[in-house]
Length: 305
Length: 296
Image 1 (cartoon, rainbow over the protein chains, first blue to last red):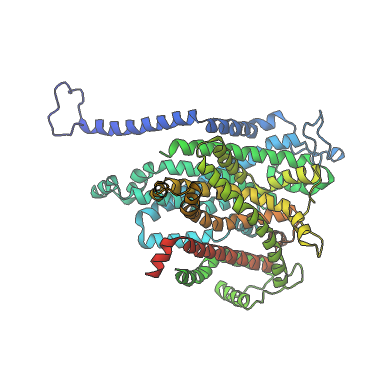
Image 2 (image 1 turned 180 degrees about the vertical axis):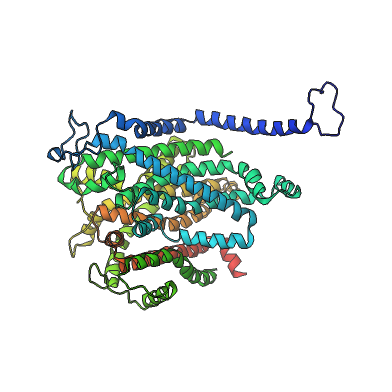
């Protein structure tokens, strides 16, 4: 590698200024690494299978309403009709078409879960970077606060927040986002603890770079791998938690065709033989969660060494 | 080490509870039923000191003492959780060890991926599937978990089996994955190679050298899963209409029955901490290295 001040070797005159070339080489390296990871990802069977499943539900969420009947149109005379040619998956207790509701029901969960996970990832990454980089008192104080958050199961905390603030999509996103942030920050912190001992960090410190730059400009790009893996894993848990809270009646409020809510509205009818308004939304949740987990599995094997 | 943990953890109780409780106190202020004109800290102190003496107040929604409601519910939930744990722990550890011994094989993939998918699917989805197949389809089990008053132990198990199975599904994958990871690590360790080279029988190597080391992380995980278990109980008890702490909490949350909610959640916090403490103790009993450090 040529260094400024050294005589350029013969025939290398086209490398006019040396330092931009060095910088260029470094970003080329990382671009190649990203390309390789994407290629690995594309070869991963579980990633592709997961992408197909999740992609299907994303399409349902975006275009579903244009294709199927109105998921909110109730028809009390034709309630709880078994699956037939007219309504493929039957009707629910208000006479709403279960097929339409399952298709359009993808929307709310696919808004809530990713937004909550993004919030959790952003908060968790910032927390993890700070606690991992500073250690000492800052780490101790923040870690104790984080432990306090983790002292209760997420569902219970979600229940409390929903009782305090009333259930809504925003509450749900904030609750899951804030409750998952400490979990992500632990992973990020662990990664930062090893990174901060590396030479490039000391080099940046010696160059007298500002701390925010060291944190977000130097360390962050190097811990992106675990963060991306953590994001996909948490997305699965976010769907799980959102569905659970909706089932309890503290998640996405009615009359949304959300799957958890549908199950919650109809599970008491199951012993009466009305299985269709319960089974199909349940299967939809199961399919979506498995899809997301397959993606997470593929991402984890592509990004972890 | 146990002494140290016992010294640190009670301090933790107050600190940990204070976080969630601060929320709770603001809920109190909103509901105004309790006449909350004192400061948060004074309220908290008054409540925590009466909690310690066993006086939890009256439930406005059910006009029964809170302690009656909560104690009954905890006992009921304990039965369900115990049954789930008795099934899942040996099953998951066996699954994890089998997967690790056949690393990379089809059986391994099946246990790992299957277990993880089972874990990721919400409890109520399992509940719906199990009720449809086993109760309505095959007629083997009742659709509720609430066994008749004074039922014998086998009748109780029959009623509790389906809800317990739902919890098993959710817990299995994670415990099995830890058991698998621990076993693989132990199988690759130097001491295992030494034991094999010494000419010990494979069974002895597995039992004495591999399992003892691989189960350590697993035990820690089982304790942390207590949190998921409790979260799961809320949902499972609701769908199976079982009068446990979960149903009590869900009902209290819907009716804004604050005293029941507070006490129930505090008890869950305590149970959670005790589970962590027990895991610490078990860990040190099983791990000779920790024992040595404590002795020095």
